[in-house]
Length: 362
Image 1 (cartoon, helix red, strand yellow):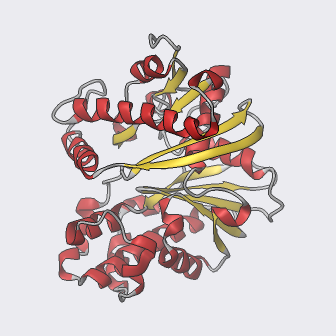
Image 2: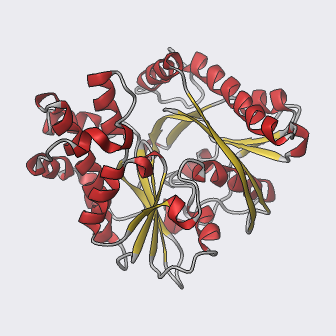
């Protein structure tokens, strides 16, 4: 909900030859408000093609901004859109309810392909959800390819902390295990935005100045989701009502509320360890949460294992998922699987995505 990450990758969908330039393009205040309203208007959605309320305007805005992001990424490199083969366009998730076989990522793939004159792969999650899978996380197959370069002991956990947190656990001789672990930055961001008008707790500074209410953390973890084994997934706002009722964040000071909600995210991630076949030896963290030093410190304390940001192994915390969707787009073009029984509960390895040729007609 904070911006668009764009990145260049050279890959055949199995091996990664090169991770190229990347850039982040923050949303302005008006766009963030439009997206927040779109998410709210999507809460009662049961038709994935419907666009009530702000959804239609948000979808067009997201598409236009992604076209701008691709062009802006290429300009300083003296490249044109003719130099790229395909764009992986995830879009903006507004609702994710796999139990109802419903997931919606707004974004007009055909319009983006037409605007850029480049093939676009979009709607990555729908095929998996339609087949009874969780539709998330999608990045484990990318994590597995990327981690081939790392001489780190296994099991190795690769954690992405966006609005929702998701983890891939890689062992030596087993399929990756993956799932959403619970709230990522969503609870913290929403609390800080409501109190201060700022979109997030920069560097975890507010949380660092506060005191954690461990009773409240335990109350937040009293939720059936944390008792489920992987694979499992959830919506960005899945814990909003639960936390509002059980924690009553309005009773906390700004600093203590930020500290307690940050601890909820760290503790919810640590909960997944009891469901894993073996305890990961170390954790690599990407996504916006990797920039929250307080969150990383809390994670290390609750996991009892080394926790490092992606930059420590030569990756980009900001760009990792942008690279991933380029990788997944190439896999989709080749008909290779994106999801697996051990990552999304898919009934079998499944490909996915909808391909829109440069003319924009799928």
